[in-house]
Image (cartoon, rainbow, N blue to C red; front, side, top):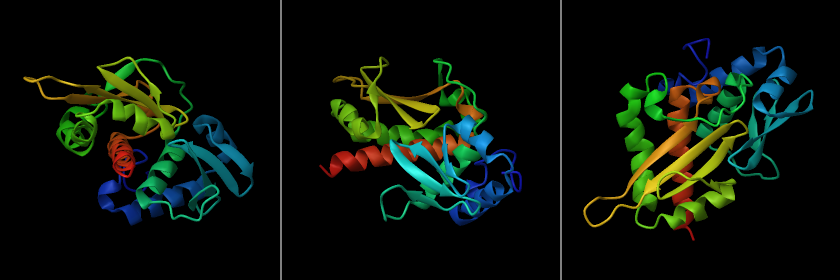
Length: 215
């Protein structure tokens, strides 16, 4: 966000409420909403509403105030999801996916932040699915996930229209424990800051683990 950081999504440490407020203010100042819809893959419904896909569901953003709601539902959208949705829309550059996968450590500041990312996203992924990696596919399906070719079991989920995320597991054996990784298309930084990527992966893994446990 231009008000407090160098890129959309870099103000999470200031608190969710402030991050949401800043994102809404930036949206209100945006001149070319239609052009930003093209860059992000969002659909402009009318002068006051646009819709975009997030984790295989449609979310509505009202203009110019930036309120975020889930289409066809009265359920309150979690604040971190609202922020991620706005940050994706605001930061989208329109860069197409490359098909080249990169690791978190290849992102700006990724090497320094990797221990925290691993603790918040990779470790929960391994704990949740390492003992039964086929459950990973089951949990990914409602989110629009599809099988990928990395590791012993992997899935790719389009978190947003132009942000595919690949979750990878190695089952391990009697001597080597299960392990995991999360990979991104090389275009990821054209849509989300490194901090946003961390929050997004943490959110995604939480949703998947919770969905399996509730069955």
